[in-house]
Image (tube, rainbow, N blue to C red):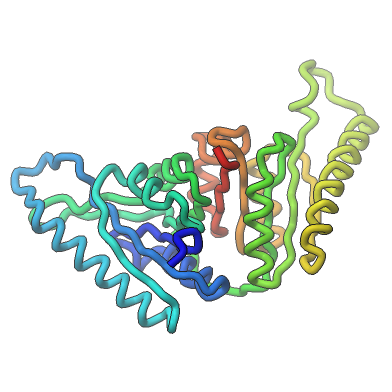
Length: 295
């Protein structure tokens, strides 16, 4: 089994209520690639007096057995495995995904207290965000309310001017090719980020900047159209705050996935995973893929 083809998915005790496993299954069907489910038991000491490592291990093994059975029942002939790992959840998941095709995580996983101790807490809001920061592999963050729906919706890709979104565009178009769906390149700009003085720009200036950004994005799109001539690649520019403008673009186009790129803490990724946009990430109904440029 080629490790670069493997779709890893992080699971915790609430995996059946989350959408990560189902999204990974959907991706596995489209790509015909294997799934590796990973459950991480947090190794930090418990404050409870009756912490029993053996009970936690048994609970973890039961959990991955349940996930493995689910994958077998719903994946048909797709190859799948399930494993238990131990360590800090975010770092352990990120390391486990090194060299793999992608890592899929849920956004609202909730560990629970086992009668004999603390079952590993995984994928609780900030943990999913930390995984997206830490992992070298692309990370797809799937919201808990997500369920498999229409598969002909476009894939949206956020494009900035940092030249750190090549990997994200390649990743997003690759998924679109598998699904035979269009790609929508979305670039968000704002005059407020260009001018430092208080006087607002004239309508003519705004129009000029709009045309400038639209032309730049169209140039980028044309380069990718030449590389993927059988894929429809659309463009859209929006003026406003990157987080909210991107969220609106995803909603308006009914995109099935939003792909973002950057090297570690790029401006766009930092905004989306920072405190300003945490609420947007937590309430989004569309899965979000974070794809870093190679380090």
